[in-house]
Image (tube, rainbow, N blue to C red; front, side, top):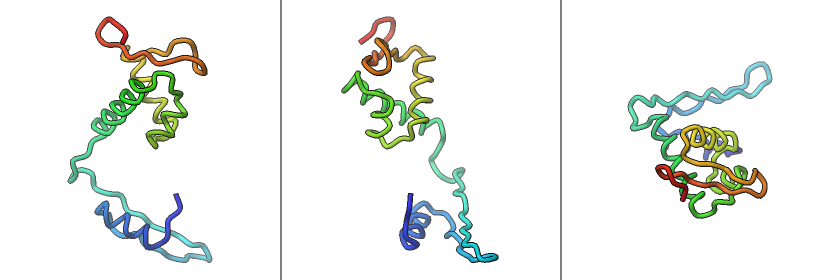
Length: 115
């Protein structure tokens, strides 16, 4: 992502992070960005995971033939993250891909029966 200095500073302010420090050291432009203290926020990796999985399941319900790449593009989630979510859903027997990657479709498992 490429941002102007103004937008970058605004982004840091909106997320409550300390403003980045910009400097030129030995002829090189450097940026020091500070991490956000998540312990003070209502944030957990578990809740982010659950939200991502819910979004993926919702899209699969609407379009069972959707590919991993299309899921990534539609939800604006990195491709590799979508792959990890799908793998965890498959391991938990929540979804199954039938008829292959290209021409297949997802089946969401509810209890012992497929939808």
